[in-house]
Structure formats: structure tokens, C-alpha cells
Image (cartoon, rainbow, N blue to C red; front, side, top):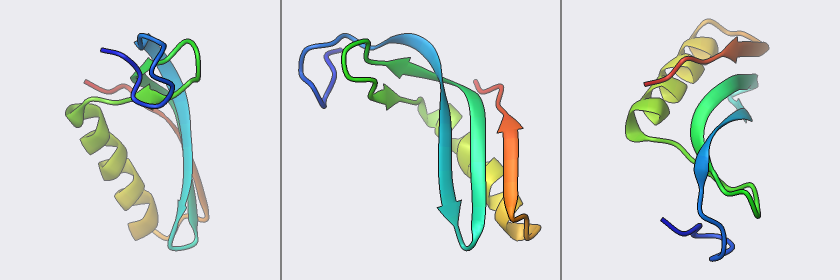
Length: 75
């Protein structure tokens, strides 16, 4: 697979930190397994990992957290 952004790098196994805001809740997910482009840093997660990210973020929003920081162990 060639990186879809830079068109030069070949993404490799790695881990990333993902941060985003939703409905006033800031969610930071650390150690998320992903394929990471060594040239531009663009990352790609599997469908299973994406589902885990969505589950954790929805739980944080549902409980009304202002900020949630989690270390992820994804499939």
C-alpha cells in the first residue's frame, strides 16, 4: 500500500495519538495501533480499531466528560 496523501511512503505498523472534540467533550486516545506513513505521518486504522475508537468516544460523550484520556488496545 502506498500512502494516499503523499503518494510516496509505504505505511508501516505503529501507534498514534488521536485527539478530537465532540459535543463539548475532548477525547484523547493514546497508543492506537495504525499503519503510519514514515514520510508524511498520515495514519490508517483498521475497521475493528475504528469501531473501538468510536465506542470509547461515544461513551465519553454519553457520560458528559469534559476531557477523556485513554490508552487503547485495539484489535
